Amino acid sequence: MSTGTGRAPHRPGAEGARPSKGERTRARILDAAAELFSRSGFNAVSLRDIAAHAGLTHAGLLHHFPGKDRLLMEVLERRDLIDARELFPGLLRPGSPAPEPARRLRLLLDLVARNSRTPGLVALYAKLSAEATDPDHPAHSYFTRRYRYLRTELTGVVAGLQRAAGTDGAVDPGVVAGQLLALMDGLQTQWLLEPEAVPMEALVRDFLDRLGLLPEDGAEATQRARDGAEAGGVSR
Image (cartoon, rainbow, N blue to C red; front, side, top):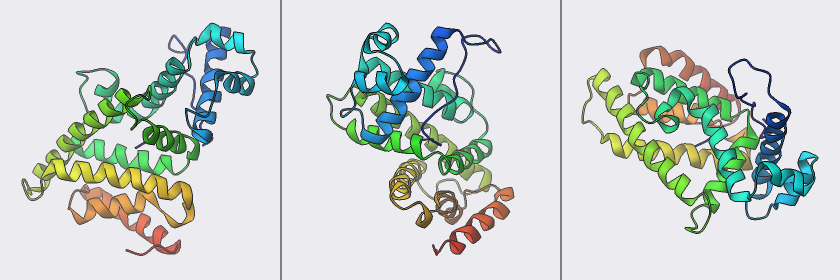
């Protein structure tokens, strides 16, 4: 699950402060790396490729990032900072309080909708998560921890929604959480191949609606998403 060109906003070192020249250079390197990783994957891209794409010398890039593994982790961490700040705060700051389940579900649906407008970031996540199934890949541990965390958090969200709807135990929350993650990741791959045929938000909403997990105020938005999917030639 991820969050369009693959470029993400830079976060200055201090709130509201103008980024320094070094921070701007680092942001340019991260932008270039994200774009190339999303296009070709981690293994096919060299530091020299990234330096050239960022308009730097190889030595200039090494001044900020001494290795490709560290650069990859910063690209992934920056993506998490954008996507998870509200939805999964514990992913960034362990122990941070999370919003109530209905609020988190709305944020999740917003994220799915936003992914539909950011093909670069979706491609980055899809390529790197597939590559990282190799235990020797530098992001293997990152994605293993991330999926473990997401399964746990989404299990809690589903259980909370079931309690609110009075359907506790109707379906195992852990099973639904795993299915939801698989659905979103699978839809992203299909969407990258044929965007006009895969309305991601509508299909995720449909899945949750069938389980009675959408908040009451989500019905109208769900109908709009379905109408959009049918207009695009995708039926239930």
